[in-house]
Amino acid sequence: MRDNLVVAKPIYEIVRKLQDGGFAAYIVGGAIRDLMLGREPKDYDISTSATPEEIRTVFGRRQARIIGKRFRLVHVRCGHEIVEISTFRRNPDDTGQIAGKHKQQAVPENMIFRDNDFGTAEEDAWRRDFTVNALFYDPVHDDLIDYTGCGIDDMHAGVVRVVGEAELRFEEDPVRILRALKLVGQYGFTFEAKTELAVRAHGDLILHAAASRLSLEMEKILKNAYCDGIFNAFHDYGFLQYCLPYLEANWNSPARTYAMQLLAERNSHVLEGRYRNSISLAMAVIALPFVEAEIGLGQHGKLWKKNHRSGADIRRIVSDVFQPHNMIKRLAMSAQNILSSQPDFFNPEKKRSTLLHSSGYGHAREVLMLQNAVLWHDDKLTSTWPRPMPSKRRHSHSNHKRPKKRKVQHKNEK
Image (cartoon, rainbow, N blue to C red; front, side):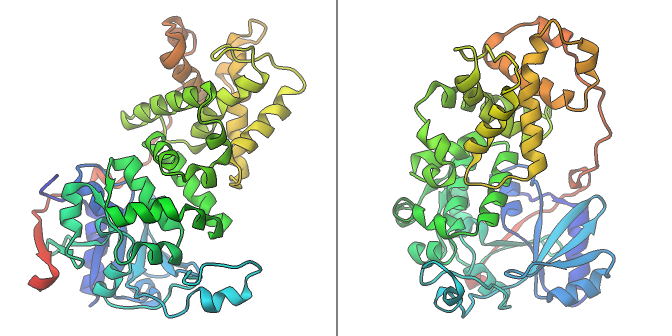
């Protein structure tokens, strides 16, 4: 566990600017968890005592934009990046008993539909999902605050513990079950006993979550470089049947085994910086073995012969694999194009120059090389199909870091 939290300089400046405006402001959530584990955060979330309108006043209308209805947030532009800033919340008074009257189907009694009741930093900590996500870090004054009194210890022990009563918190927002399993799959954490019982007993609550939220969560998982571990955790705890029923139904098949091997290889390449973190590429990797199983030549790695039906077959299979999620159309089309191009790499009638200069060559080649690394081990493929010319990459927050020494502060020390 890392002792010093090294925060990106632009994030430090956002917190400082809010504090200079007279507001309390902290880095919250997964960024703190990643920093303590020595991982580079993929993004930062900031929480503050300022209302969305006050946040917008601090940063100006051109730089800050208020979004959301169920949960109002402010997106602040920071160079090429967007930083999400929330106002401290408390547990809302309105739950499913009120909002559920307008629903066509029965919903859990305590399900939350509106979450815009502003509160204090401590109230915000106690309404968060897990203790390891309820830590607040002030990089300006170098304070790590643990209002629940369990977060730091649970981080060191690698424990997922619900803040409050597990069954109630999952009923309030079933997506918390998905996020609990992500912590297990991504970080190798283990469940506290009551949290584990609630996860196993109430996975079906996820069926009440909005389809748009679940599709967004699936996109985040596919972009995650630990998604193979996340899917394994979903299966182990009986959750995959609700999240990706096609994958669960085929869990014991050779196609699923090969899909996870390809996905694990893709993830290792992303972590090493060799591959782009692409959702459509991950979709193609997962779907490819199932395409082979249905329209292929009878063995993994043999691909399939293209004909007038193969495009429609690939489109249908990709849709089946990712049901019930309504994936963004451009992502699904990109995944289908990646898959459709795989036989072209071995088609002597296909002009090599045409494929090399096609717009989707980069992603298609990456999937080709993943198959080669997992199955074929053909050294000639790398020279036959070279990397495309690199494009300019955006600068990330990680280019600017401000070293800080952390002080631990529990609630009873304030």
